[in-house]
Image 1 (cartoon, rainbow over the protein chains, first blue to last red):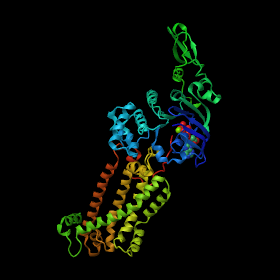
Image 2: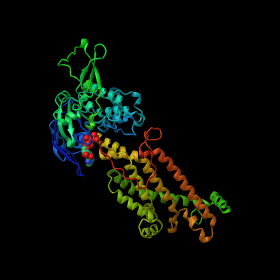
Image 3: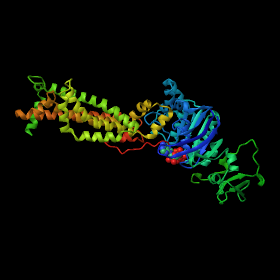
Length: 302
Length: 250
Ligand SMILES: Nc1ncnc2c1ncn2[C@@H]1O[C@H](COP(=O)(O)OP(=O)(O)OP(=O)(O)O)[C@@H](O)[C@H]1O
Ligand SMILES: [Mg+2]
């Protein structure tokens, strides 16, 4: 389920142009992260994929098919959507929330409920929560239910709009790891929106850095972007300019550990260097950005 | 005080409940309830779909507020002239029903659209994004979540109607007004007081019933058991809610 944006623009009725001439290829079975500061058009772009927003011009294709010809209701039922505030139906139990879309598509109630329980397992929720109402869950639990609901029809495409934006950093960490684990086994085409560059680098196979108006500043793998920021905006956004990504080793830590500090002199982490020698990772292992960006704060204000 | 006690005694006397030359209290009570019911049915048929439409689309709210307030300002005089016109209508029972329905429509309309409108825009947005049709959004999300306010509107409308239905006896319809309004003419103060008491008790009973109904209409999950509740569950009947723009996305 590859998704393609072709010269897409969106001007809202009130005259706001949220996206201008946006083109992007989103490969299937991978996670693409749209990252950029507030108001740059991320949500608008995401919602164009399930036709919650229709482009003013340009076209969007899913596996080569122009979605402007697909009735929105049917399209939305085939696409998972997870949003920041979970968007759960407050008057339905956890199990019923997860079972909602399958039941809309005609899956018998019993089966939908059973599947819902299995999905709760899958997203790391206790089955005992199935009978609770959303208001009786913590924010992190609600987000897990939101993810379970997004996966309920086993969609090929999963859209996630800052799903972990409203939970505390520890829970966010858990949820991110959970998503990585899930995605490792499911291989969905995930389009993930965030304004947190660390989250983008952690989760994304492909990261799209956006500027106001949905202008693409750079597209690439986290490695490519970190190694070669396309311009000052990107460098600034990912923190390279402020020296947050450029770490130097500092002697003085105990034993085989070497302390890494960023340009401002703040400790960013430690690295193991037996006998003072750093061993370079071999080509096969893919570095995760997290390991070098432990204390980078959110770059959203860039 | 003595008149009041006499009124109570008169109410408790079974002989006054049976029909004699004139309709007894039972017939009057049933007449009052019948006219109320018919009027409310008409009001519901008009106001609920309209209120749902306004609440769902967010369009026409201003028209509804103006019309409701205008209708509220006219009662006594306006009602009278409407009755005069209505008296010429063919099915005779329409004569009291139409003006009474007009009285019931404003609170019902306001309650309905306020109820629909008070539903969290993000919940509605999520329901749509999942692939619910507009009807499904309406029937499975907006109406259940807006129910307490809708029932609140119904409660206000019924209360208004059941009290005012008394006036229908002016035009020859059998209601408790028979006892009340015919009293002064013939110096029969005791039936007048008894009838007034009966109307009051009836209104209080109906209001109590609706209070219970309103509470139980709050969907589970947004009622008192839950930690957080939606505006709809918390809200009471409001006539002109501040327009809460539906925010789409985040
Ligand atoms: N329905 C709408 N009507 C008018 N303007 C809108 C609408 N939705 C979004 N916009 C505008 O379009 C621009 C992009 O909005 P969008 O929600 O896509 O940003 P975003 O990148 O998701 O921001 P955030 O990180 O704050 O969620 C903003 O200027 C916003 O005000
Ligand atoms: Mg957004």
